[in-house]
Image 1 (cartoon, rainbow, N blue to C red):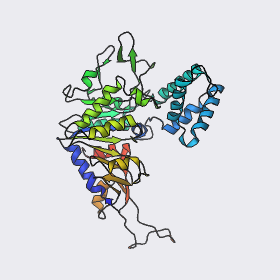
Image 2 (cartoon, rainbow, N blue to C red):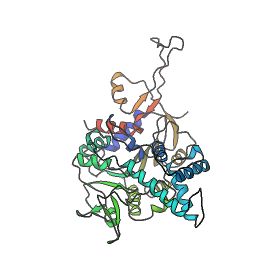
Image 3 (cartoon, rainbow, N blue to C red):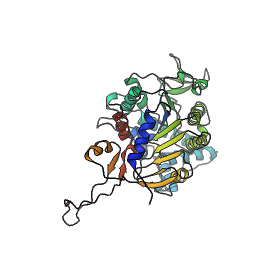
Amino acid sequence: MITHDPTEYIKGLQTILVSDKKKIGFLLGAGTSLAKKNENSKIVPSVKEMTDYIIQNITDEKNKNAVEQIKQEIGDGNFNIETLLSNLELKFQVIGKGILNGLNKNDIKLLIDEIKNKIKELVSVHNNIQADNQIQTDFAEWIKRADRKFPIELFTTNYDYLFEIGLEYNNIPYFDGFSGSFNPFFCAELVNDFSFLPKQTKLWKIHGSLGWTYDESNKKVIRSSSDNNNLLIYPSVLKYVDSKKLPYEALMDRLSNFIKQDDAVLITSGYSFGDEHINERIFTALQSSTTSSVLALLHTDNFEKNHSLAQIAKSNGKLSVYAKKSAVIGCQYGIWKLKREPSKDDTISLNLYFDEDAPEMNSQLNEEKKGEEKWTGTGKLIITDFSKLVKFLQSMIV
């Protein structure tokens, strides 16, 4: 069995993060909006919680019956808000003048709109928020205090304002592709200009954002205080099609071009590699650069050799995957295991990124016998959790 020593690779990560030669980017998925700093943190619900809430709050009896029928078609194990929306979107395209699940074309359109509005409601956690209770604010503080030659680039699939709140609370200037004051408009040509605002942090919302809308009169994407007609790529089968439209195409190009740069490192957190249109950009861009790399922090216990991402990483040395119990590094799949038992001093720093398995317990007395504890060296990498990753990052600048 191949093993990877977490201490060795975390030291390598620390070296990357403090190096002035490296261009650092983060791809931040839905898991980062689930991460808490404390009990007062506001979070966006998980897919399961979002699905349960939306289904329970569909009040029209005809719609409830339709959703129940669709759930039976999809199957309990695969049913969630994404598969529901995908099913409805596909039926809307083919229904014509017919009836499906008791709904006509207009009924399906109204149900799709109702579900999308409920999604927007659930991700609008910015109201009455206290910024210093958010882990995203601590992440922004690390960005502010880390002494770097190249600015940090943040790519996120999230619609919410949590990273904006964190950056602004820490008085960090950032560019998100919009320019102007009255009705800020999206500038596609500036998004892929790496010389524009070279010292500023960049925030790229590759699935859109609350507050983005399309101005029909000027044919522009603008940022508005209105909550109506937000430009968002909703979780459905149409994600791939929508991602090829402006402004999303320009933002996806930026992701590709960032990875293609020499000495670029993209770190993913809270992203499960479930979006094929994003994965395609990442893996294609990796093939175009000899010195760039991607480090995927995968927050799962179930990362086995046959995992789809493990298969890709085993054939691409520029992609490393750090899961909780195992990893693929240098095309080699292995479990996390310390090479030597840490001293008391080592344990303090080790606890920032690795939760070492406790010694085996005496089965009869349910207690450890002094001198008989069995050290295994195995454990879990905890920085796959975004909140733990942020604490690890902050430890480097204290």
